[in-house]
Figure (cartoon, rainbow, N blue to C red):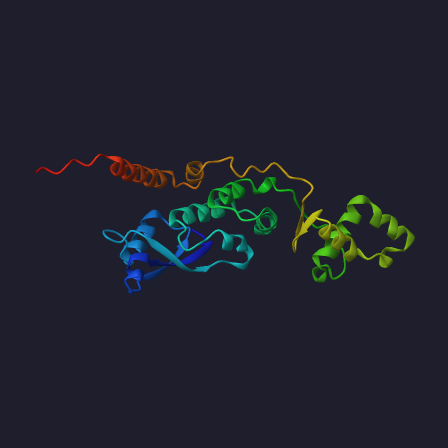
Length: 238
């Protein structure tokens, strides 16, 4: 498994008692290794709750920072990491969408990872330009849009390509809310794409990640707890 991110997890019950029992967990991981890591910090018996105390998130996957909180489910994080590994979405594409959509929850992010190819994201067309790697995203977009429209070729014919402020073209498009600019490409904000962040349920996302059995166990356990809580308590014998 190629690790996507990691979290520093602590035993919440022991933390409240003033004792530290913590460990790093890298995701994705196997269910067996996850259970072993939790046993290592004493989860089980009287201690059932965990707390995420720190994260190790790659810069290119910054969209995860708004998803992971202190009490985020570790099983949910394993599902997200598994989808990241198996579907290998382009991180810049996901970041541009996330930055313009707003805060997402685990289920919405899972849906986005499965539908990332439907995001209206397009790579810049800057091949052949000198020092292209040093251009700003605004300049890259300016060159790209003039190439796509045929304007750049006409400017070349007239010898006027050096008199155009391509960066201003990209800057205006960004400020007007037409596009979101990344280092390698742009997202067309005028095109909503065909993204449905509620297309798949949480259970379906776990199944897609190959963790269906684990999630079903969690759901069954939760149902069992609910049934126990609703079960009438027999009156004490006098």
